[in-house]
Length: 224
Image 1 (cartoon, helix red, strand yellow):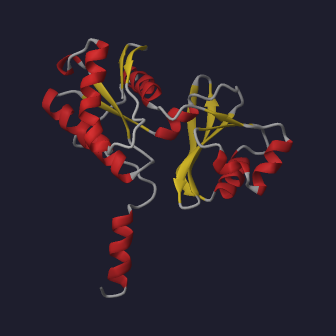
Image 2: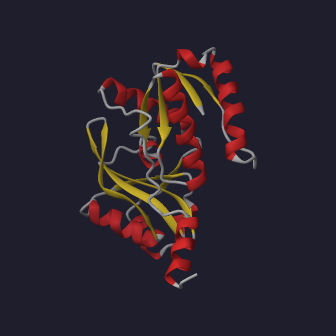
């Protein structure tokens, strides 16, 4: 959770406890606004993480943003967590591969190409085995060097496919798990370009279907 004025970070509140996200969110919003000296009615727009990530976390965050946008009549910018992570890469290679732990032996991942100061995603965001993600990123980069960035570097380091990247001198740039400040900065840049949405159009990109849906469909297929 972060409050920004232009690109100045006023306050950030990180979810660093084991407290359920749904019960943590509203008090954190109040703390963030008070710490930044801002009232909710003074907020011009909201930038929200649209995924990929925990189904519950993404859903709770987007539901809250939709409610505020409807009440206050404000604009929303949906930002990918992976894009926010890729934007933090300090190495200046033309290709950036961002990934996060998706559990179940998989990662959420996406590959971006730099175009000036912008990042252009190649293909869709994916949920994939770590080694397969390394191979997919290498194929997208056409043999060129890649900047790897994640808050979950350990997901790749034991993969055989990663050893070949290490031989090239590549490494995983470890970044903080706190995405809110960068999501806010990307949101500001998108607003300046006239790219935003509203409460009705805002949607999540879970990449993977939620466990409840998979369980229900599995039972339905067996006539349960």
